[in-house]
Every structure is written in C-alpha cells, then in structure tokens.
Image (cartoon, rainbow, N blue to C red):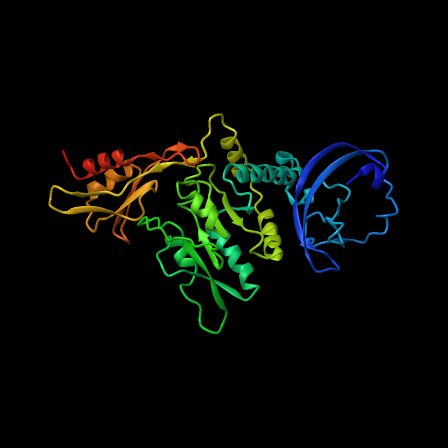
Length: 379
C-alpha cells in the first residue's frame, strides 16, 4: 500500500506479521493476505478512497486480537487494532509466568518464531507449492484433519495396508456404508515395520499421507511431487526438533476454509521450546537437512542354513527383514546398533543415519552387513 497516498504517513519500519486466510464478506470468495506490522511517522488520515471501507473482525476467537478484513477481494487489506503486540491478554498468564515470559509478549514471540521457521522449512525442503502448518505430532495433526473433514461430512479412514500402530488405533479401516463419504484415506508412504513403499499417484487427491519415513529422505522428491496433503514429524529423518510436526497442504486442492481453520488450530500450539530448538538447529553452521543414507536389497544365507532376505523398498535409510525368531541376546544387541525388532510383525529394522544435502544419497549397505554379521556371529 502506498502509505503516503492512502494514509498520509511515512513508513519507519516494516516487519512481517503473519499470513491470514478468510472469505470476502460480501463476495463469498476466498482471499489470502500477507500482513505486515508497520511503524509510521505522522498521524494517519484516510484518503477518500478508503475512508468509507467497512471493516470486520473475521472469526475472532476468545483472547486473540481481531484483524480487520476488507469486504472486497480486489482491495484485500487489514486494519491492525491498537495494541497489536498484545496477541493475548497478559492476564491469561499467571503473575509468576508473566514475570518469567513478559506477559502477552510471550505469545507475540511464539508467533514470530513460528513464521520465521515456516519460511525456513519451506525453502529448505522445497515446499513452495504447499501451505505449511505446524502442530505437536502426527497423531494430533491427523485428529485435526479428521475433525475438519468431518465438518464437511467426510470421514478420514485408513487405507488397506499396514500403518504405524498408534495411528492404526486412532482411525477406522472402513466407514459404515451410507453414513459418510469415505473417499479420504490415510496412506502410510513408507511402512516403518517392513519398508514397504505405498506409491503415490499424481494427483494424490483423496488421500492424506503419513510421510514420517519419506520426508527428508531419498523419497522426498516423490513425496512433494505427488502429494496433496501430508504430515511429517521433524524429529525423525529431518532431525530438526522434538515436538513439531509439519502439515503441508496444496492450496489448489483443499478449501480456503479448511486451511484457515488449520491456521487457527496451529495458533493453539504455543510452546516456544520446539520452535527455538528447530531454529537453532537450522541456523547451525554446516547443518545438513536430509538423511541421505541408502540401503540396497540384501539376500544372504545364515550359518544355520536360514535365508535372510530384505523386504521393502531399496534406497531407504533402513532395511527390514522377516525374522520370526529373535533371541533375547539378539534383541539386546540390536538396540545398541540403533535397530529395532517389532514383535507384532516379526520384523527386524536396521536403520542408518547420514546427514547430507538433497539429491546426494550415501550407500550404507556395507555397514548393515556388518551388523548382520554381529547378530548372527558370521565370521
């Protein structure tokens, strides 16, 4: 906006405030607004062109600052109310916590940290085609999406393959016929117990992807090219921070209403620690954003005459084997190797971690052979 022309003031400082979504009040069309906090020199006086615009507080939740949203898509502007730095009433914090965190400034700081992190994650992980949101965990994110889809009379159910156990317990495998549209399914991109790759077909509309074991790996390109909406924890292969999960949504494939409500849910995630931890990690000199470890297919004979053959997709940062019988000593040893034995599926997973840049896989098959030799005393 030309401040001098419209408000008769000069800009002293301009800082990003946030991204807001909404519906134009009288046109019923979606609008997206990038909002900036501006320090001005002079007394604002509206020109005749904007003096009579009607402003509304769009979806103002309790304890949050209302942002004035214009009634027109062509002139999508925001009026920030007085005291905009107080994003929540300081009395929302106890007196002790107000002293510790500076009252309402705590919420302002958290929102600013989140916006900075969002920009960095979008750039580093090449998510420019997505709207990016952050929540506490994959389970929480899926619960949010389930709620929002349910409001549109759409149920979120599990695709017909194996899923991560906590997710499997939260969602149904099928929806009763005739009750709701069961067209949106949760697809586990890479099975954490078997390494099976459930391929995505573009456009991957009608599915929500659990990308826990493909995001920030050598499968990353497939995910961001084919995905429509996916969730990825930032403590696994990205190794950014504990307590943060990314939700990425293609804006052209999901409604403005759903994305606006996701943003409201996101604002309820007010913990400062994981955001600070994530930014410290990303800003560390020499930080590498991807786990570029790659393991080839393995097929060998053990000393007892049994065949050990990898299952799942080659090129992942881990390798899985069907091992129905695994001794107590082997289970103890595999933990020291950063591996896992899953009793419910009778599978062994040997994981590899190699930090690197996008598109530069590092073959770690040799070190997996070394672990196998130790587990089965192969000389």
